[in-house]
Length: 61
Image 1 (tube, rainbow, N blue to C red):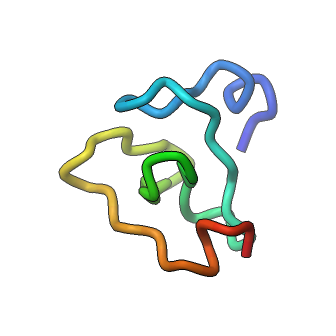
Image 2: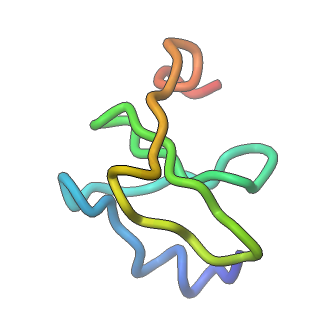
């Protein structure tokens, strides 16, 4: 994912920072405990498309 894009993206719910997952398939908002999918290089920033992070992921895994 383009680093410039990562600089401007924020969680659509809390407006907090997002972290690119290790496999680069999701953007994680640890504050809300949500993972937003990245499909074909495009972040899908919809709450309805997000999944809940598990405990390890919330802590930085």
